[in-house]
Length: 105
Image 1 (tube, rainbow, N blue to C red):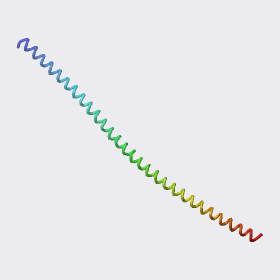
Image 2 (image 1 turned 45 degrees about the vertical axis):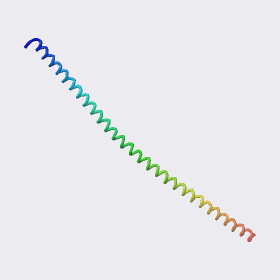
Image 3 (image 1 turned 120 degrees about the vertical axis):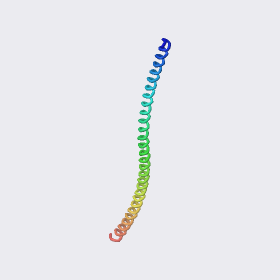
Image 4 (image 1 turned 135 degrees about the vertical axis):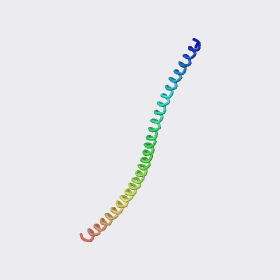
């Protein structure tokens, strides 16, 4: 083998070694990227679940608020009706008392 062939052979081996090292580095980077992507996707799935739970919870709170609002309004109407009937009863008692006072001096 000539020096030229030996140099070419060495140069080819060095190139192959360099390419193998680069391929290994690229594979490591790809593995890191895939690991990072999988972590991001897993976190995204968890966050999607949390967001959905928050939406569901917010909707339930809104329904509860609306129900409490309706109940409050009904209680308010009931209170006003009781107040009217109580005032009417007091007026009737007052009229009866005035008649009793007039009839029994």
